[in-house]
Amino acid sequence: GAGRAALGPPAAPAHSRGGGAHGEGASLRARSRKGASPRRMLLLHGADVTAPAAAPAEEPLAPCCAATRAQQADEASRRAAALGMAAGCAVLEWAAAAEEEVWQSDARAGVLSLALQALDVPGGWDELVALGAVRAALSFGDEAVARVAVDAGLAMRLVCYTEMRRDCPQMVTEAAVALQHLTESLNNQAYGPSSEAVFSSGGVSAMMRLLRSPEQAVRARSAAAAVLGDLGHRMHFAVAVLEADTLPALLEFLADARIQPSEKCDATRALSRLYYWGGRDFEHSKTLITASALPTVARLLQTDDSSLLEAASEVVCHSWAWEHALFGPLDATLQRSVCDRLGELCAHSNNMTALAATQALANVAAERGEGSQAALVALPPLRTLLGCSSDIDEDVQQEACIVLRNLAWKGPERVRALIDAGMIQSVGELFMAVSDNLGLKQEAAWAIAVAAVHATPGQLDEILSEQDDVLGTLCSVLDSFAEFDADMMVDVLLALESILVAGDAGGEEELNLYEVCVEELGGVDALVEVATSTDEPQVVEIASAILESHFPDALAENAYPE
View (cartoon, rainbow, N blue to C red):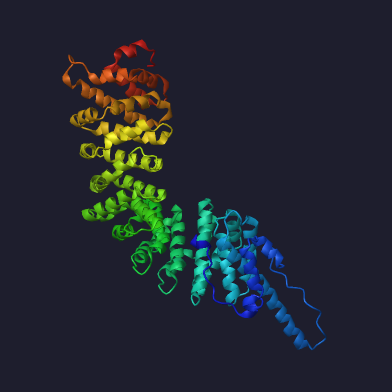
């Protein structure tokens, strides 16, 4: 990834590269291209992987004056430093092209140790290369290496570099990206000390200043945004990050047309995390969110960068409820535009982008009141998504079923929209076509059940007349009830009860055709099994009520607990 590439330090003085363009540095780079390991390269050049590089063996010095000896000693020190940094430079160049599994953990730790010791000797090129080596060693997300860095107090040093070396944008960039890798790697491992170390070192204020510094490199500002997002990834830091006016700064960065879309991914993901974790303390956080993110996110969704599209979809997913709670009613045209684009992205060639867009639509559909209305514009592409094509990712299809379930929960008006769009039929066909994905089958059946529960009697008749598989789907779930979620089973039973009650509308003298269908599909035996074999009180109560009202003979024939 971009984090592993060298960030382009300036040309080094000849003496610091071991002999100019064709000296020690050039030979090291040639060896790195041949595939030598970082550990091997360090050892080849006299460097212990856990200690600074040793000085090369020197020829015996001829007798001379004290001043000459002092000058020669200084030159020997420079040669030793040059050797270590040349090796570090070669390792850094090798790391940019190497496969992750090739660079072993001990080699990363060795490079990190060498670089940390080199940072103790400030001064131009050596310092910059050492920072690059730190960044490269941390870029793979190795937990053990990151722990070494935290224990060595690296977090505070990197924060200081972003503050004290503003005169050297390259150093600021290397330090900020290294800090980003550090917080990412340990946050992914649920290891708190990395966030604690950055936070206690004044990381929030330092990253905010860097984020708001247009004179610094965009990569450095992007890394600062990522660090703020990683800090906000922990709930007890999220409010503190929000209190630093981070959201306005992120929105300002994302709205800058001079910054390329590919360079906005980290800031967008940080925005998503702050909305998500800030929502855990809604009463406090709502006073800190003073501007709507939706206009900015709508523009980001129009780009072609798949990573940015994924991150922007996540922002919609986590911020939609905030937008309506704090800034509603929102512009209807803007909402439809966002949801229309999300519908298009549900079929994106990148599965992660498609999944994030579908999850965002699921949260939009779950919003109270009119907040879910905009999701209806995405029904046509969602119907295509529910097709039985093997090219469609089943995780995306599962989220699409959740979109339908959340819409159906809103009542008859939303159910009418689902019927008119042919969604009930499509999800029923999907349920019957899937055989080995229990999660997908559950969500498909759940969507059908919720639609049946919240439909009017007329809508229910329409659903059943147009879709033969509805009763078959419900009875199939009852037959395998032990495999499914108890909450879903409650809705399936309520849906079955609604259908059977609708069948009684003709009066007691007329035959209830839905009861006949349930019997033929084996649903009665399944109901008895559910009522006598589960420990869920609500499930037992509803199943027994259905048997008592519609199939009393079956209830009498089977031993049934009180």
